[in-house]
Length: 176
Image 1 (cartoon, rainbow, N blue to C red):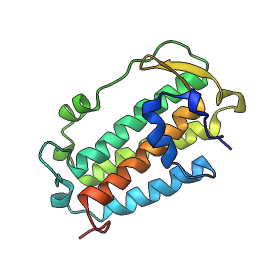
Image 2: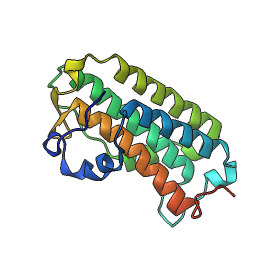
Image 3: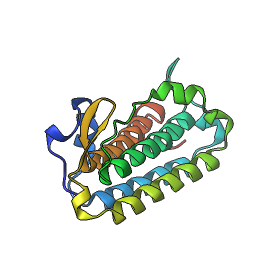
């Protein structure tokens, strides 16, 4: 089981994500989140996928694309740090990624296929890391971070965006 990271294992700006992760088996949290994300997006129309709750905000499709992009980047960080690589890893600007993505031009089904592939790869990676990998320390975005902290950030980031979609995009939490 992947233990919850201590507060000194990751930058403070990730605290809200880590706090969202419930107690229990992290891999089960990721699997449960995947099922909920899949159910939500499979029920959306293409028109609803283009919805933005305010001017300048991402569309629902862009949020899903962002979730996949971020998990892909964070899983790469998890791999590098978990293998003992202490080479500093650059940060990224999620708004730049969205601007270059064309997520709104893709069918929801394709975006969900990408998220599925990334999530499956994340789970496989986490399942196969040796026990001693979880406490390794690396550097990402000019800060120290442990492998297990990255794992919790991945889970919390996905939970955060599913919560945002339900609260700000779908308002009632149901698909109309």
